[in-house]
Image 1: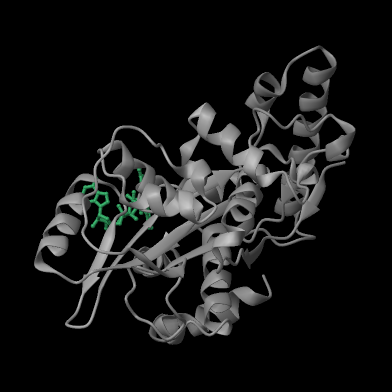
Image 2: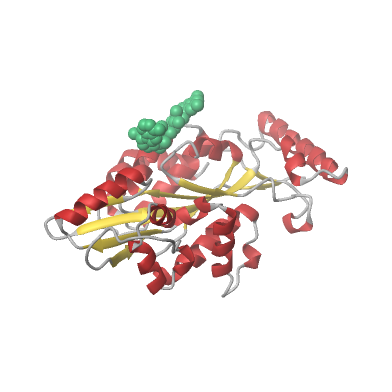
Length: 319
Ligand SMILES: Cc1cc2nc3c(=O)[nH]c(=O)nc-3n(C[C@H](O)[C@H](O)[C@H](O)COP(=O)(O)OP(=O)(O)OC[C@H]3O[C@@H](n4cnc5c(N)ncnc54)[C@H](O)[C@@H]3O)c2cc1C
């Protein structure tokens, strides 16, 4: 019998540079369901392995905001870098010049031949992210860390601020949600996870559907289908298939752990599309829950959206 679980959303918080490697490890190990391998000292080696294998999307889950000397020359250079590198954002006011990017953005800046951020990483215990090739400085003056991931919960510079969440959802939902190109994702891998093994309870875990009501004939039919799928999956494993072969029979309802990071501007765009009645109910369920969570955590910038979707949030709470 398949195991049926409820959808769920939580924030993966990040606020200190000392937590960056651990945060990335926590996000990345979701893909392999190897969270049990996390120890006090495993993060550095995990990040090294990720970088060596070229699986760089995992390091997109950590974002840094820097202050650089507010000169015309620096502003010109920042704009030039932003035009060449994905995810590099900036804000200039009379009093400050801020620049923000995730760890992958900074590696790409380094690949352009600029050493500024690498030098800062090496000095601040994040040398594992530095390329350390033949580079020159782009910016003049000192680079100072302003904040990790988020300026503060009252700040509305939406494109500088990032939030990471962990969702328990299904394949159908992440198929839709991963269409959002400016967000970053790490997803449980059905290629690596072999659900016939004891580690996974030798069973399939299936997400409870939002748009089928337990006890109805339609729900019974769906549940019976899920149990049939499990039988076929386990049989394929028994016949010697690897997970990447047996997974070919997995359904849209299969549970997936998804880590998703986006800046607030993109989160707002996604909520507008995915909390709306036009979106699939499984997607609405997790996106409405995420919006409610952000509101409850005190991110003021979401107040307007929260008010707009409050009736939907209330409707979906019990589903
Ligand atoms: C109700 C609904 C039904 C849908 N149905 C289908 C369907 O039947 N089939 C299907 O294939 N998809 C479907 N989609 C997916 C949809 O077409 C988008 O791919 C998805 O919603 C991502 O949103 P986005 O393109 O607005 O922006 P994101 O990818 O979230 O990007 C954010 C913004 O960045 C900018 N941007 C990002 N990349 C580019 C680019 N390459 N060029 C120019 N600007 C860019 C745009 O301004 C964009 O609004 C559906 C989505 C919804 C909400």
